[in-house]
Image 1: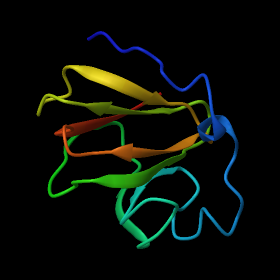
Image 2 (image 1 turned 45 degrees about the vertical axis):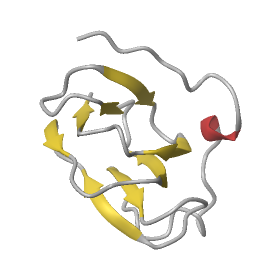
Image 3 (image 1 turned 30 degrees about the vertical axis):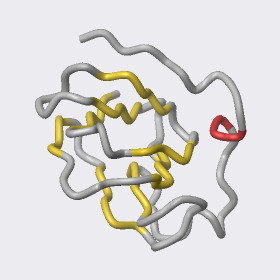
Length: 107
C-alpha cells in the first residue's frame, strides 16, 4: 500500500481547539457533516482496521483525534487501497470526500 503524506502545509497540521473538536472523543478519528467543523460528527473510528466509507460526498472536516501517533488514512479504493491522504495524530483538514471509499485506522 503506497501512502503519500500531503499534510505538510496549511492549517490542517495544527491541533484543533476544544470547541472545534467537540464531539470527537480522544482516541478517535472523526468526519464532520460539513466543512469548517459544521454538522457535528457523522463518523467516528477508533479501532485498528479498514472501514468502508458510505454517503460522504462534498467537503467535510476530517480530524484525527487519536493518540500515541496513530494515523487516519483516506483511500479511494473500497478495501483500503489507493490511499493518498494521511492524517497524523492531532491533524485536521477540510477534504472533498466524494472520491473516497474507505479509511484506515492504524498505529
